[in-house]
Length: 189
Image 1 (cartoon, one colour):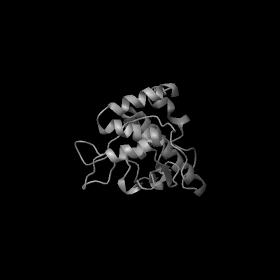
Image 2 (spheres, rainbow, N blue to C red):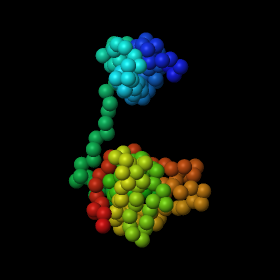
Image 3 (cartoon, rainbow, N blue to C red):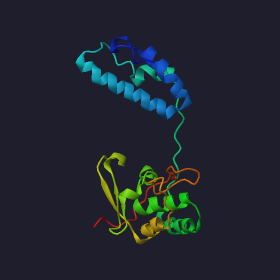
């Protein structure tokens, strides 16, 4: 919507025109979009690509955008409840239960588990090497695998059509749960 305009032509009215539909449909995406537009204008200011105030500054726009609802976070599982929770997970069938248990055992982020590939797993060395491009910190991460984590991996079906570890039942795409990360693995050797 504003890609063909120069920096000088973009004002807060145009920014609102871009933001409002996104903000109303998915407020968090709208918040991120506004922030990114603001950063682009912050980058352009020292280069003298525009004059005046940053048109994506929240102070200029906040009275014209719907108020965001408060985010509701899931309550964390108390560590005393973890043994019963994992015991319950172990008796459940399904790939999501295995993925959640694996996430807990490896203290991985959900996206790392969902995106796990067999080519990253070395069962002999009992190590999972998550590549830098899938790590929030941007650095390759080696994750030691406990006996139970290895047992989970060994129990999973494999597909010639996909390198994903946790494959959805309806497709050859990755599948995984949304969980809190808990650290239970020993340090890498």
